Amino acid sequence: MSQLAGKYALVTGGASGFGLGIVQCFVQAGAHVGIMDINPEAANEVAARLGDQVLAIPGDITNTTSFQHSIDQFNDWAPGIHILVNNAGTGLPPTPMEAVSEADFQRVYSVNMYGIYLAARLVVPRMKAQQGGCILNIASTAGVSPRPNLTWYNASKGWVITATKSMAAELAEFQIRVNALNPVAGETPLLATFLGEDTPENRARFLSTIPLGRFSTPRDIGQAAVFLCSDQADLITGVAMEVDGGRCI
Image (tube, rainbow, N blue to C red; front, side, top):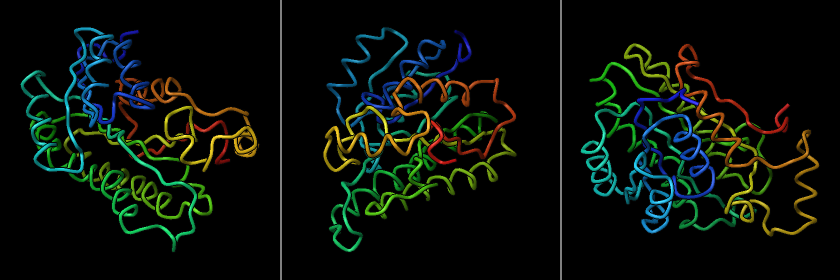
C-alpha cells in the first residue's frame, strides 16, 4: 500500500481507539505520522512500536499554548503538513439533557468543537501557504441519527459535520480538501461510555440497530481515512461519510 507515500500527517488523539487505527493504516499506506495525544506515555509506546515513520507529540487540543507547542514540534520534524486528522474526541454516558453538569458540557464542547477550531487556526495558514492539504474531521453517526439522552454529544458531532462542509467551501480555492467520517459506535475505550454500561444486553440492543450486525473497528475507520486523505479522493470535499454498517440508512 502506498496511497500516502511521501505525505506527512498529524493525527490528534492518535494513541488509542479510532486514532490509533488511523495511524496504523496511514503508516501502512506509506505516510509519516505525528501522533498528538494528551497521554504522552501511550503516544511514545505507539511510536516505538511503529518505527521511524512515527513521531510522538504530547499535547492538549483544548489549550492554545500546548497545541501551538505540538504544532511547532511537528513543523520541526516534517517538511510540510499534508494531512490533519481531527480525531481526538470525548463522549457522555446516556443522561437526560437537563441533568448534564456544566463541567461535562464544557468538556464535550472543548474537546469535540473547540479543539477543531484551534487546529484550524494553527494549521490552515500553513496549508494555505502550501496551496494544498487535506483535513479529516472525525464526527459520528450521532450527528446524523441522534440517540435520546445524548443530546449535547449529538449536537457536538452535528457541529463537526456542519463545520466540515463550511470549511470545505471556504478552503477549496486553496486546494485544501475537508471531509469527515461518521463512525458508528466502535470497539474502542469509549464504547462503554456510549452504552452506559458494557453488558451483553446493551451490546445486543445497540447491534440490533446496525444492519450489518457489528460495531465498527479502528481498522474500519483507518481504511476509510486513508482513502479520503489520498489522491484517489482528490475530487472529494465536503463529504461526511458514514462508516456505520448501515445504521443511518
